[in-house]
Length: 142
View (tube, rainbow, N blue to C red):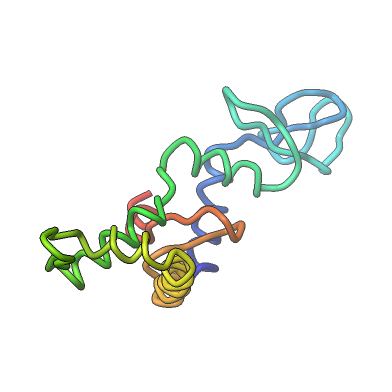
């Protein structure tokens, strides 16, 4: 699934960029520099920068078009959907998330990590760098 998204993002990066001769600092739209004849070209992303490869262009597209998943917020929402009731402690009715985070933050972080892994395996969230996650439906819409 992740590779499918990467392949589609690579195609999008190619569409949004222009082949660029790094030696002559000129666009080479035909795949060869008209000045020096080189076909060893980088890419120019108009309004941004130029460089080698597509990964940096994909990163710029993701920054420009998508908001990364707030994993802490998404996990809390998932827990609240699974446990919508409140917990009564003496005379207080408390939110389940608040109680879990305050009583055992280590367990909370372990559960959050397991939730992230599960969502990633299910293809609900996707990462390309191992740290920034995006919703799969946002990537599909892009």
